[in-house]
Image (cartoon, rainbow, N blue to C red):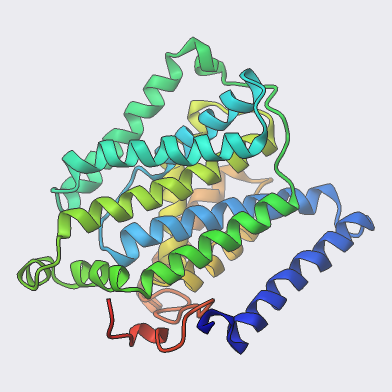
Length: 316
């Protein structure tokens, strides 16, 4: 089988080795609960950044409503696990499906919009979800929903991150991914060449929402407590800053950006009032001195079939 080539076997061994080494350090107590908390935050941010990168960086759709999909996933998983007593895997599936359904519902009428108009529409969608949460007593309203079971651990966060990266990275390098890139480069030319631009924009919007919902489920089932304010406009900006910081259009850049900015946030947690100021300065410096982001267009090469690397395949 072409999938079982040397490169993929090496990548699989590397992924499993990292997992078992960290699992060993956790069991030995070398990695304490505080470090695990930050690992969970970094993992959630990686999933959010990579999924938003598919929408904004690869397809060129400027979305400011990504936190809303995370919110839908968080509440869906919280309801399933805390109120209905379902296992965590059911909560994750419900989170992913409900968020992707919301992506389809909001995507069909809005993705015919472009540029600033699409950004404003997605921003409005995020505020609608927030207002619905604030006025719904079943999910706690403005006080939030607490007593959520803590199911998220190193195993869940690690493999959800790995699966997200592999699926989105391979999607980008496929025929469908190149169609999305063509939309980003020139939508009119893509339509002229027969690319169904509306279909692909809704597809990536749904995929991005799917993984954002999973990130929301991981977040809710680690921190016990969620409230609508946790998924507001500023959260969407946080995710967008990570994507721009790492490199728009680069999966590796989103991963590096999520790790670095999450670590910076840890050092700034004692001065939260300066956090967004520091973020703004970082974004300003990146735009001035390295507009392509830290990683630029360099990207991951994981689990690819032979001849499909670097987008050089010629088959559909």
